[in-house]
Image 1: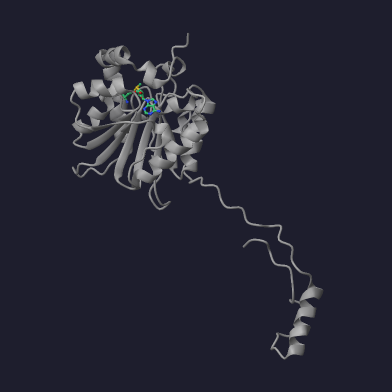
Image 2: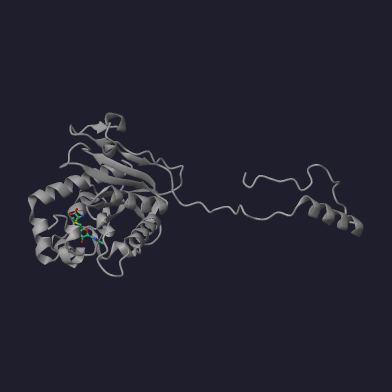
Length: 290
Ligand SMILES: C[S@@+](CC[C@H](N)C(=O)[O-])C[C@H]1O[C@@H](n2cnc3c(N)ncnc32)[C@H](O)[C@@H]1O
């Protein structure tokens, strides 16, 4: 059987009471999730002014990722689909407010109230259809649309994901861009199959907001740039445009010919209207778009 939890059962079934306890008592998992959360917080690049922010932890589970937010002095709302995971979070007395919710149905939060969002090891779950009614594309659309709306303009979301393959990464990123986010994927430890980690770094707001992607880390923990890699698969994907589809201009509108315009002007003259004199420019063709 695949070792990917996403392929074994829906999240609310996979993370049952036993699994949620096992997950939260493993010191290895605790250490990994803490590191991922710290890196996500770093990539959020919140102003270094000591002001506590209202943050969102999407797929918060038992609160391992949210604890990093508390440690940094922020308040947070954690959302998860697994009641068992949230029960463990309650037992652990995490500081965040907890919501039992499916991110694939949209976040349902008030517009513009969240200062930053993290999600650690959760969003790739949306790529699976766990029920007959599940359509991953619709769920990704609902999720990213609602995430965009609830974030304050200029705020960031950093989502650490484990996509199954390149197509899945592109699918997730594509829906983020369609929702209006700018950003891309930051890859840490790109040459290590074990340590490689991917973060979607998304910025919400007007194009004037700085959307430059931070660098990923290499095996020595130092920043690296795309020029360091000849391997395409290991490069930081940087898409800094907003990708809302443009409305198509109507190009097929039929225009009336020069003779029609001349006749019309003549009719008006006969009625006594003031009409500009005819010239070589009368009823000339104009470019379809400027
Ligand atoms: C690997 S755990 C990570 C939990 C936590 N972020 C951490 O770092 O420990 C993934 C979490 O995503 C949650 N999840 C998966 N699909 C979800 C969905 N559609 N809506 C909300 N949470 C979901 C799971 O229930 C699980 O708690």
